[in-house]
Length: 218
Image: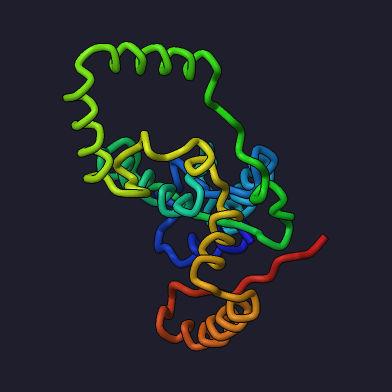
């Protein structure tokens, strides 16, 4: 996928051989560290294929992977755009790729770790007792006002969020949303099919931004 996308993208850029990419950022999440070698190999092959007609004398292009979860590809684009605007590089290549088919998503349902240590809890308890011994009435009233004003689940009030809530993986959060709003798996699958069917006409809308590619399995 990466090889064909890189080659096709650069093929459409006029005079690309005069300014080959000085940096390449690839957004990816599920591949982990193992995807680095694959991405590097695919990008290099794509570059060579696109620059076959007039390759530069010395093609040395650094490649890095960016992981910012669902915004990985977007972050890669932002990084390269900022590099160009700041004058750090003249030309760059940014892309994002993901293969859900080759990932079991087992980690998406893993139990989040308990990062709260006993020492922190002990210190917190001692501080709380000292506070109560001080100005009991005033602190108690202020505490009640803060709770009422903050509301349940207020993301700005980090103290009200448990470690488990913050560390809940996406596989679980999606299940929680489906349960809360009573969305069945069948409804989700039907929605997915409708979106894929509708995608058939998108090619005409985005024109040159779209290209067909084939990926080998196994």
